[in-house]
Length: 466
Image 1 (tube, rainbow, N blue to C red):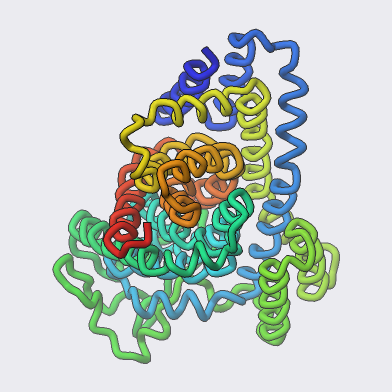
Image 2: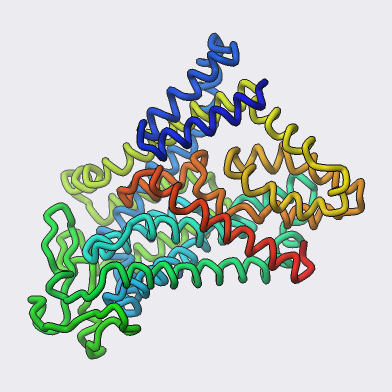
């Protein structure tokens, strides 16, 4: 019964938000509360919610201060060179912009944290998508898939969990998986290429005059090549592979961030770069808990870059909307996960999935695990899957001669889809900053993310890794 109710609760949530009948925050709170009553444990709802909030409180704190930190870094111009590099490559060609989004998300994902990846990627690319009237769900989908592949890095979380659950060395799991993951990342780049071609075809012929339409709600300015007035008459055609014929000097002036904004701190550029590099190193080396690192980092860069209190208040106010939206979503998700785990729905769903595996599939348990990782990591947290389900699957595989290493590698396959799960706090950073409805993102990304997972699985089998 709990198994049916668990799947019914998740299905109800997904249907309602995809049909836009409820907001994600309302659905994350009200639907699990209702199902908790159906299960007959309504009296314990408070305990489940408190447990969920307690478990996700460090994540919410990390996101709050990470948004402030990276928001300030964007304000002061730390990422302007990266943006200029991407834009120089992308020009005003939608295809190049989508590919650039995938490349940027993959590079920034090296820090192992999805939230920071999405904050940097969206902050860099959002203004350009808006000005060219490109699809924002393409941006969120491509970024989520690229980050999902890179999330398998040993310091990203899933690999470490698999290693801990099965008592293996993380490098023994990850290193042999590199060829299959590289194929998966290449698949994301190829997919972004075709999605970009589709966007180029949809948008048709663009001129810089059209690109330079003023948007009062944006704090950014798109500066055209040449005179800067947008009257050069150069075009970006739907069939052009290069976007524009601007000279190199003109390309360098084609930027999406206002080069004269009052918050720039060019004299502190290397200080900010050093602090950011130190912060990311500390995250990877686990010198301190991530929420503490971002709390300290945000306080430091605010104080140094904006020594006057009114300026600090202005920067905090500028990023308050993102902080409130994301932290609110995380605490709402705590209700969902708290009820799922507290009522025992997750455990029953996991056991049911394991029990329905035919006996004859025993020798192919690695393949089965790879396939199961798609729905299971989407419908439950990584902790639930790697510590609750994977050991059971690994035990079944061992009985048929399948090594724990193969099982651990196969369990990583579902990560590109997992990064768009409603149970992943980082995805709310992505859709919140991109101003995309979660339901729209889900409808767009699920099929492509699942395809990316299957590409990784197929490559792993082909290379003899899984």
